Amino acid sequence: MADYERQDFKRRVCFVGHALLPGELSTLLIEKRMREVGLADFASHRDSDPGWINWLGFPYLPKQGEPVWVDIQVIPMLANIFWRQVANGMATSAVEKVALDAIASAAHDQIELTVGWGALTKNAIGHGQTFIDSHPELAGRFNSTHGDAGTAYAVLQMLAASNLNGGFRVAIIGANGATAEAIACGLFTIKPTPTRITLVGKPDKNGHEDKLSRLEDLRRRIITKANGNPIEVVVRQGVAESCRGSNVVIVAIGGGSTVQGSDIEPGSLVIDMATPRACQAADPDWNNKLVLAAGCCQVPAKSLPVGFGRIDGHIITDMGAGGDHVVWGCLAETMINAATGKTGHIAGTPIPDAEVERCQRLFLDLGMKPQPPKFFGESVDWSQVRRFPVVF
Image (cartoon, helix red, strand yellow):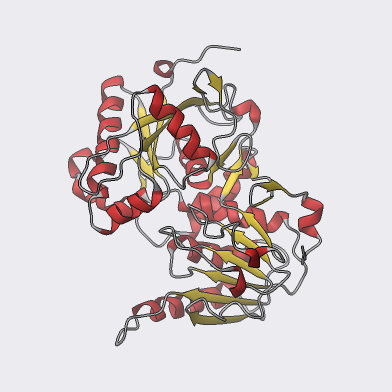
């Protein structure tokens, strides 16, 4: 196996993340790295500075574009704790410190740097826009992306690979979110297209209609995207009863929220793109639905010659995103942006349609495929997925 050294690469990725849920493979691998660097456990105090660890480092050698060295820097904090720090504003400083250190290191080494914001870290810095606005002195010194276009396209890839029957009716839970908006508008890129889209968002507080207005705006965008094709677009607030009549449900909520299986029609295909996952295996009401994790994609093995690097002396090929050589969609977008020399920033919301289309083109060109289908960690054959709807 060839030797690859970080300093030999002219392009670098710094991907900023945190731990997800206890017991998940990615969490267990983070714990192993923490022990290697002398950290005993995850940060749990709201007023503490958790620092960060270099979790994984590896070369990405795409069949097109330039080689890239990828560093995944992890704030050693579980998702529920991290989300509380996002809510009270304390996570912003932790996320900024990781990026500032990477930018300084890249300047010292005279290499091109692309920063990616993973999972809830993007919520801490306004999907990257707050960080950019707070540091005008860094203009031109780094590139960045929140990666949501990559996540959105990875979900659309999964839907396309499922070969859905004509006339399917889709509900999107969490439709107020930026990634959900991009998916809703991108549904017309897969064939066949749905006959009905139900946009399920959070209820407004008494006397307010901000969330409802955003859903109505999205409804109008979708109808425009339909370009005259007959489609019904429904707006609902609150999950209870909202998914009735839908046989495909996309779960796009964040912040560690969960969705109950009892709210979903029997026989439905459920696409859970939340990070951490919103559908939990312990809920017995999922037994008569097919729940697939989504939002990630599989990188060609040839492009990852040493997997995702080593932990405890072992080469890691499964980082816990969904299988061998599978990465989160936001990481995939960050990697391909660096490899193809994309400059500037993809920050803030909404996600431009052009960025989802760009991911569609580059994912195909670079051989990135939908993640292997899994039902709560158990592999499912694609032929079973394609016999939609599926009843367990």
